[in-house]
Length: 512
Image 1 (cartoon, rainbow, N blue to C red):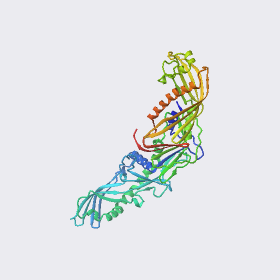
Image 2 (spheres, rainbow, N blue to C red):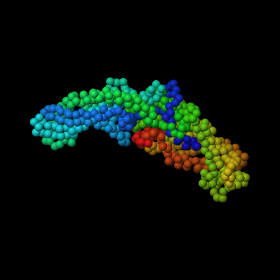
Image 3 (cartoon, rainbow, N blue to C red):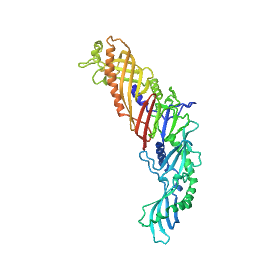
Image 4 (cartoon, one colour):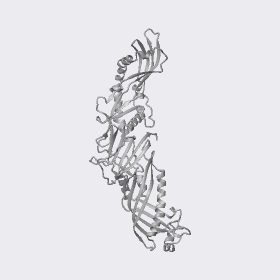
């Protein structure tokens, strides 16, 4: 497999396995969850998990026989029913719960919106003499909230628990801005606007006499359920179901244990992960240089993945050690017959090296390319630049012998190669294109006297580059699906800076 293909492949094939912790606070990967991304994740989690909760008493709550007189108007409501069915979030827009980040308390404040905080019914309003009447729909909005801390446990795993604050479960909300309100709509025509006449006083009386009593009766049971969801269900969801970087092909694992606590900002939460890379089947760990600082200036996407360039180097080291940085090119790979020893028209190896054509007429030349050491990778101006040492072996083969094919070595070539690769993201797909391949030969060892630099340059230009580059570019054009479980990415960006890769994206939940 070629070096450029390996870069594209390894840039995404990370594992969710969490192994090999180390005692320091250094890290190689940072995940940034912005406030918008957290709000969407909370809405998805609740939308998917609430049907599994034992919410029977709570979701069936209602207030019956409301009979209150305020400012000379009698308000009669037969029944108010709580609307507790969450709506599925669309295109990343939270519609059941909002989320704000409190850096001081290191908490997320999750506030129920209409879908979980609305008592609905019909109200009949009439004056005390009964000669003025009006009917309306009524919505009693009762926002409530709870506070969640996203943190690391003692073993370095991601976890969640209820915050240790007086309003960790506020039913109704203790925020004055979220105080319960009453709205009338779809009212029958009335010149006197009967329902509006005593609305403010009725609102005060109803909230004080009936609503608070009902909510206080629910609070204990509801808060127990919420705390169980946060401490258990949400923690398991974070560890198992929100599989941001799944294992692919069981080739590598990467240590996502958290060496330090998350960083809370008003706009985002950053989580820090070791990033140590190892071979899946042998637990062989590859050298990386952990860091203790990072530069991530963005928060306009829902999620960001910041990875040290050492992660890519570690992947390449694994491929190098296990012999995967190898590319075989056969004469059949060239449509123009450039690796034939005999050619009637055009240019082939045999025409450039007559001794080769004379000694092996109507034969094919095959090439084997190997990397001699772990390639170096640098990122500059949104290009991935790979440099490495290579050795190439040339063999001659009789194409008529279909079985037990015998090949004869005719040359060994040592040199260097530099490749520049452009990467870009379209939705959930990472694309790549080879921008340039620059080979440099240092030594040629061959028993064929005419097998010289001129001939070798022809082989490299017409065979290696002409064959390999289009194959890589076709593969890169098709792209690589970024493996994020149950999520489809959009508005995705990729940025290559000195020693780092940064991917940002919005996302939408999908069923698979």
